[in-house]
Image 1 (tube, one colour):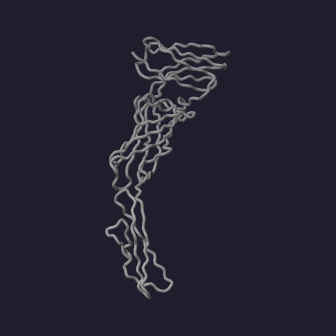
Image 2 (cartoon, one colour; image 1 turned 90 degrees about the horizontal axis):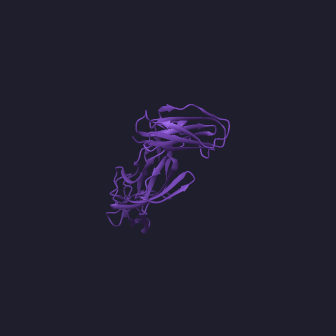
Image 3 (cartoon, one colour; image 1 turned 90 degrees about the vertical axis):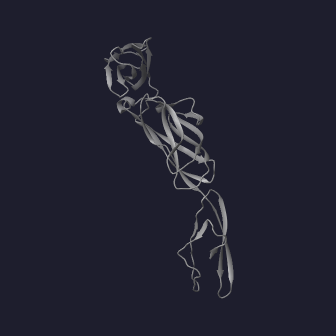
Length: 296
């Protein structure tokens, strides 16, 4: 056996030495290795010659398309509530050394829970952004330049870290594809974890509460007015937390035997410094948190 056009991207198993002798009904199996060095489709042929008892030739046609594996992933990130312009990178790399074009266009679709991350409006990578219930789904397009064996950022999400419904949200790569169809990809999802304030007793914000909490700041932010409106009676309790989840101000229980039409409570921030705070309301139908920024 021999390859007709040497050198070739096809190679016979070097563990077999030719010529060989076969007995009657004996079978011969051999490996053919495909080792391309560029992205392309290849064709070759393998000639098998049998010389006994009569000369016979058999041509086996070989065809192959080079497909290189790449890795695309989102890391697990951790951020404080209220962090603005926080960036979540999307990485890619080659899984083994392989010649690739310098510019590789791609498109991907990813999703996460909307309540954890508010995107900036001018992200150049985002082609479309849709909200399905609590899930934000993004379509992203870009070009990876000079992809190598090292992790490189091919796109980024940028926005404000918000108070979600729990400790973290998964960031799922629903679909990824290179526009060069000869490339294949392995995907790995990531997450955004909320640090500090997002403790189970603080961050468990229920949807569709019968009680509504609104916060209005004064002209110089020295006083904050909280307004409570509720369809049910019972006990209500307000407290103030700093961005690290530490309670800095307690307010006495307020008990209402009737439906609250519009209850106003003044929150004095004179003894607290400037920064981001969270107002937590415990009501008969659940818990909710509002974020405020105090300027001094």
